[in-house]
Length: 573
Image 1 (cartoon, helix red, strand yellow):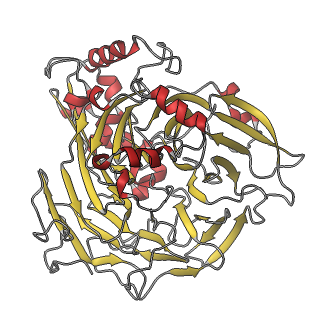
Image 2 (cartoon, one colour):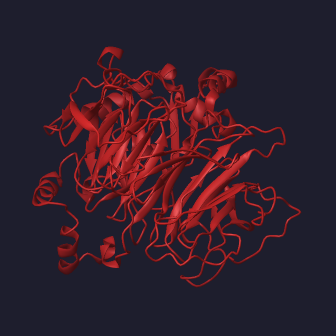
Image 3 (cartoon, helix red, strand yellow):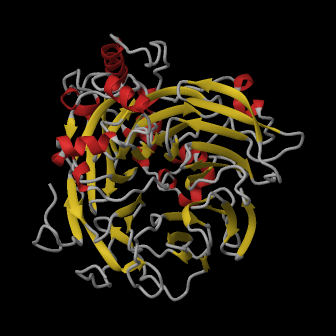
């Protein structure tokens, strides 16, 4: 367990915490905020969000940071643990009128020291493409709000593409855009392309190429966040109806789904090897879902309010085996070749390489520990370890077992009595993520998109940081404060009577196991680190980055990464 740091009172802000790796320390002089450093009055504002990109300049200081505070958007050189932040010299600053930025994302493929492509989503539904280095505004999408009038909740470049990007709205719809196409002067007309359980995909009917290329409608209520799998072939969607839905992106096929314990899901992320998905939301829990088995394998209870962000720490995730490392992991050249387009912001390490190559070593014993983190509206940071006894509960912890046998046992144990909405037993169980379809069945081909997105490279994990749905903080939504009165209020979260009925039907099934039916994780670390609700958690190679709704972006140095000639202060500014 972590040592108490930075204060003795329970409600005092912590400036350090301890794990088995050592002490993580807050670097107050590496804090980024508005230049005046005045706490932002966050009432009624959209969440503060942070995006990173590396521009591969020759100085060795290529990291750039973008963050939004209220109506303002800032773009700085990010100096991390190396030097103090100089807030007097933003590379770019923009103040918007009539709308607020809600989320943003850099394209790592096109980033250079002279130019970067930054997408910015807004509260009124528009999406802007800007270059903060050239201080240019390239294009404005959905300018007349003919495509969608609701708030943009998440925007992401499609992995491996220089021109395609995906936008989610609080309406529950997602739209696929091409930066080369216009949005037209009239509202788009759609034609059904594919339909499934609680989702549909439409293509835009037009004589000439225009945006959007595709429209996805997913679930009921807002689509709060989506995340692409590390190889870019799958898309995980967290919705206000409480469902996590995972799709094969290219073919728009539902791979699997799960339901929150109650309330909406607000955030989602993938493990570095694509085997597990973690989601968080209004049930105050973090839920771990197996991609291969399409089932909940664990829940974590540490937060006292809604979970805002979940993220895997690829640097601390570890793999141990009984064979020489040279036989177990691929070469560094092979690995960097696999993620060549993200090399500028490559945060992977040898354990990521080994994780991604386990399929070729199924005959060798494997031991895995995944580290992930979460932050919430309770102002707390939690760190969690997902260990082998949770991942493979049906077998003793033997060093002689094979990974193949483990996966087969887990698969067999979960196939009996599958509900109708579970996946067929013939789901591929190989380590590499199964292809969603052959090229002939691709919905993107069907939509006549010139740019191929059927082949994606591996994404850096830190790019999966997105916007999520924000509501007023309700303390009686905490797991520890469920009463008949608060239960009545929780029922109001359902967007319809159908949703309420579905929730009652799913409890106790594979979609939503009861609390006693799956392991309950306890946090390795649980610390109050801010005065206002936390909205950002990003794991980088030498630090982790958090941000709160007051507009302060904080850098926490990993153990041994603090520069010795810089004094460490003890309080948060």
